[in-house]
Image (cartoon, rainbow, N blue to C red; front, side, top):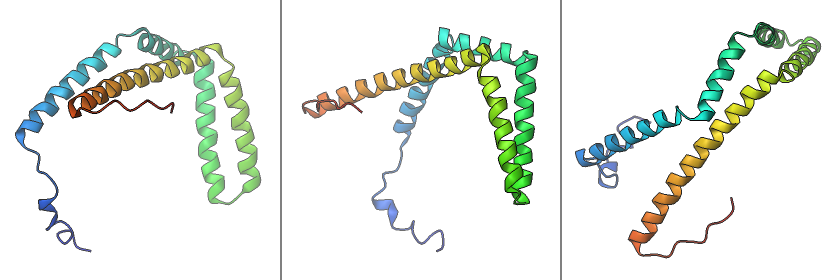
Length: 150
């Protein structure tokens, strides 16, 4: 199917963006960036950065990570040769290394800080979403639908 075939009649039903939309877009994006910078100063992000730096300088953790990466490359090689026994053996070795890695308190701390940041972002997104949908409902003159637990 050639490129121009399926586009040539679409002009009528797809509204073209005008510069007014563009100005709003940039305005929204600028605020979003401001919000992102602000979130960057939160305790959650600061803790994440500190944990990340400690992990980078932690010899045992780095050694475990490198061993896991090396074994993951080996798996790819053995899969190419369809050597299922070796793949299974290396997978078990990776699991043991991963367990050891996960048992280091610093790693747990790092993972927790990732979870915290994701939670913070989800919270911000849902506040924005709920506020926007309230405005949309008010302006449309409709009752807000009862919120479902999703």
